[in-house]
Length: 257
Ligand SMILES: Nc1ncnc2c1ncn2[C@@H]1O[C@H](COP(=O)(O)OP(=O)(O)OP(=O)(O)O)[C@@H](O)[C@H]1O
Ligand SMILES: [Mg+2]
View 1 (tube, protein in one colour):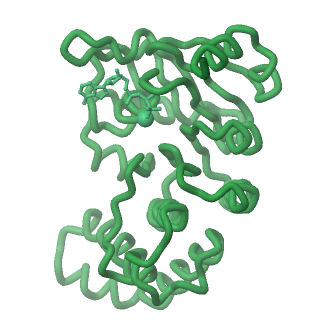
View 2 (cartoon, protein in one colour; view 1 turned 135 degrees about the vertical axis):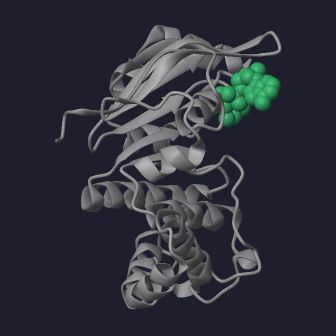
View 3 (tube, protein in one colour; view 1 turned 30 degrees about the horizontal axis):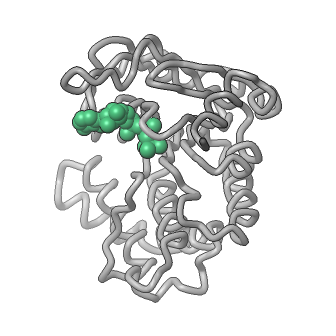
């Protein structure tokens, strides 16, 4: 139901050999909401995302998905439950075409959920036309249709980011975690990228938690923004509130000096 909390993070703490990357961080995402996560370099954003997606076990705190405690669960279990992520550095099969990357991504998701190879073969064949259609429609939504048979290696950095979002979406998650999706996207394409994210949300009703340094991008796509500083919650609120928050301005102005 829209308005229900689909993802909740409470009191998350994590230290790496004495470095306190997160200290008592809390945030939540409602069903169908886009939440932006911002903060200076090293403020703990990726660590928070790693704790949510299971790649790092927090020292303290809890992550719940639809009310179910998933703290410290394995990444594959969390992905199968419906929380999927992209990485700050994209992981794509460069010697395969865009379409092949998407079909492989969808197929591996099916393989994980099926136990019998007999069933797997039969079901995969039966689903292939539908999968192909879905892969093409996702390429269309990230504006990469014209490149479907090109190798990933020829894509620009920004196009690779767009493809990695499609690769997450083909597995049909309920919550999408994006780590700096607009990094490397050319400024002239950022407007288009904002529209793409808004379209995907409108059409799919999925919930997003997006880490991003590009303030124009994050303010345009987010319903709410959470600001971290030095591993702690600094502020949260609407993009407008965040823009006018003296604490946030101080952190960002301080960083530019
Ligand atoms: N695996 C790790 N081992 C040791 N220290 C780490 C590890 N991951 C993160 N850190 C440290 O934790 C702190 C937070 O890092 P994190 O990557 O979460 O920041 P960030 O907000 O994502 O920064 P950026 O905007 O630069 O991506 C930093 O001091 C970083 O050096
Ligand atoms: Mg990061």
